[in-house]
Image (cartoon, helix red, strand yellow):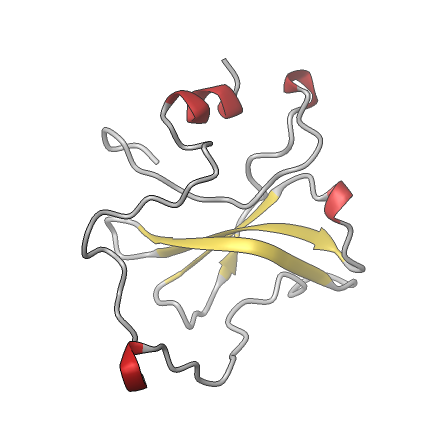
Length: 129
């Protein structure tokens, strides 16, 4: 069974956003809307490379040891969504860093007819991510 089938069997490839009651936060601004502050770059996939790289879609998790993990689609610039073949992985003690780049993860697997990677997410089940 490939990853896509496994996720579909868990009900996670339905295209729906499901949130338990009370799970979504209320905004901190007027009338319950969210206030958006200044944008700050906290991770640059280009660090340590001669060329520019980007992150397209990402997710963060905090592991039991308190480390933050970033997973995101990454590719050399210019952007090319049809050639995004693997996910970046980086870890940090807090969301503002400092971030340590790790080895790419979950490459598209041609033997399962995967041609690109899509917006990552992480779930934990039975002590495994």
